[in-house]
Image (cartoon, rainbow, N blue to C red):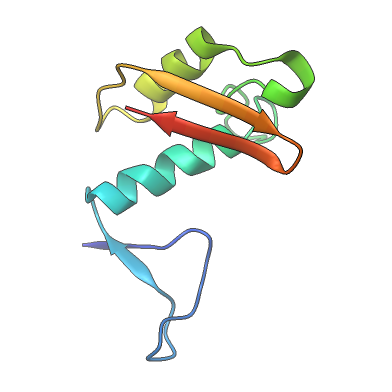
Length: 93
């Protein structure tokens, strides 16, 4: 089974690009969406997301807890956040 790639993009064959379900790419893009979403942004799931590190400072415990809760396909052992002027860079291992 395949999921659409996020962000959406067109593959060379003219179709929307996909990733295999439960692949490393699928898990990575799922974590990327989680880290880019703030709690309350999704009306149907208001608790989905992670705190804004640019506004509130990095909250490693909350980010790790959100990743463990919303992305159970991976075990989160460590979270590194780097807030730059261009945005957030995250490394989850």
